[in-house]
Length: 285
Image 1 (cartoon, rainbow, N blue to C red):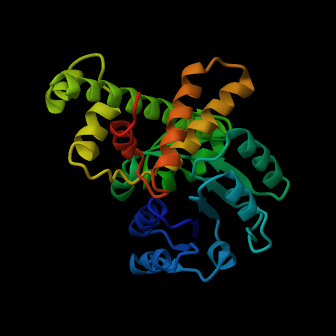
Image 2: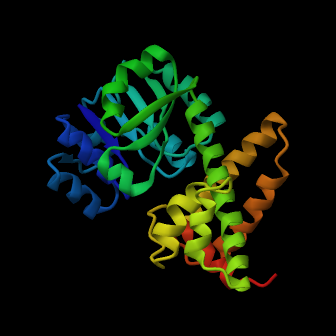
C-alpha cells in the first residue's frame, strides 16, 4: 500500500501513474478536486492525513517545502508504522532533510529524498528525472515504485537528492535569465528569435532554455510550463543557502536570485517561471 500526500500539479499525475502500475494508492490533499482526481484514476481518496498513511508501507510526500514536510510528519495523524519508508519527492532543504531523517529513524521509519525534474508533462508520462538520496539498500527497496515515475540517479546519502535538485534549478533559472537577455537584445537589433534559437541549439550556447522553454512556452506566449516562478525562486534560495553553508563562492547565484525575486514581486502569485521573460520585456535597464 502506498500513501500519497500532495496531489497537485505534480503529485496528481504521479499518483495516477502508480495506480496504473498496479499499486494500491490512498492519497490526501486539502483540495477536494485533487482528491477526486485520484479517485477517478482508480486510487482511494482519503478524508484526512491519517487515512492516507494508514497501513502504508511506503508514503510519498509531494509537498511544497521543508516547513510543510516537517509539520506533516510530526502531526499526530501521521501514524506511519515502524519499518515504513517515507519518500520526500518535493524540493526540501537538504540539511533539514538530514535532520528529519535522523528524527524519523528514532521512530523506526526510513526517510529518503527523491526530488524530480521534468515538469508536469513528464510527470504524466512517467519520464521524470529522479535524484535520490539515502542508503543504497533503502533506495533499492523502493526502486520499483520510483521506476514507475521516471529514471533514478543516486546522488548520495540522505539529503543529497534535495541538494542536487536545488543546484540544478539554480542552473536552470540562471540559464533562462541570461538566454532571455540575449534573445531580447537580438530582437532589438533586428534578429529573428527562431533563427537565434536554431543557431544557439547547434552551438555552445544551447541549454534547456533554448531547446525547450523558449520554443515551447515563450515563443507561443503560453507561459504554461507548469512550474511556478515562486517555486523556482524557492529552489534557487535553497541552492545559494547551501553554497553559503559550505563556504562555496556564489556571487552569480545571488545576483540571479535577486533578479528572480524582483520578478516575483512584480508578477502575479500564480505566475509560471517562464513568465520572467515577460517581466524582462517590461523592465528598464
